[in-house]
Image (cartoon, rainbow, N blue to C red; front, side):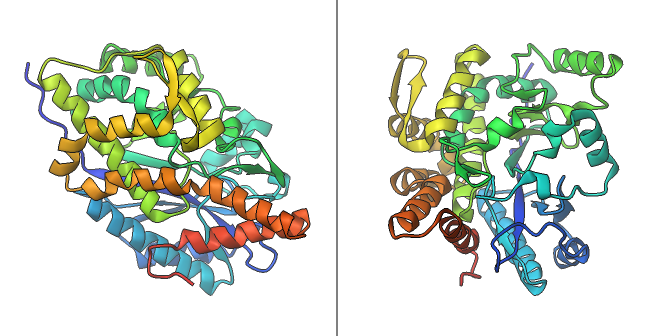
Length: 383
């Protein structure tokens, strides 16, 4: 049976933090009308509450190209930031706040979040983290599962380009993506198992629902999953990128990888499936060291510089980047490695402030100032 090529339309979801620009701490009790005003400005896109009131989530419209996705994401960041500013606050795209305490946050009054807090207890209450999800449309269900099995190998490569959570509650965590350490406290997270078909995946979901473990498939919080809302494959491993152009680059790489894997399949080839435990090791290396460390090339069986692996990925998807008109967006991933991710820049600002005589509190505030500025980089609303 010939399987139709995937549509690969794309949508990007991001979660942001709302910050008091005077104290640089989170806005624990922001005005409730912010969400309504944001949604009015972008009626064809999505602005919703998150688990904590100091967070806000956005989602682009369904986009036919990476360039359209960049335009939609820019529109969202600009409008949300503008509304937030009108209420005396600032927007930050980072997966953790440098010093805010999760114990001080207020949950959003929404039934889904109330159930989450009840069921997960402290593991949910401390979810003061933000991520980025990328949806790619693949209408054929078995193809969606097949590509999920294969592209999972490359998710740590994407995580390494996005790290933005080196701090936790006022301390250097020693990790470039501490967000994952917090998120992994929940059940049903991490790298998913291998599935032979969409039917096998559906049987697992049904079994878990019958056993009373989950209400629906949205409670599977894997690093990648078939979306329960849309006919898409939803990539969820990555931190939220502080710079908008980094987010677009990661989305472009993800969609190009899926197109490349489909091309392999169409020529009766495929990427080798490795055990999830091995992929989890690369996930850890990306979480710990980001794009300036090493990761395992499992074909070679040894650790190599991340930059070498990235060059290989760019070469794999060169034809696909050309076909999807995102060559420059994909190549820009090398720029991320050269200058570092948000986590690198946060640590550099913090350490420079400390070396200049700032105390820990002031150094953290300088990190927040940098994040506020870089969140608007490339949107036209730069300070």
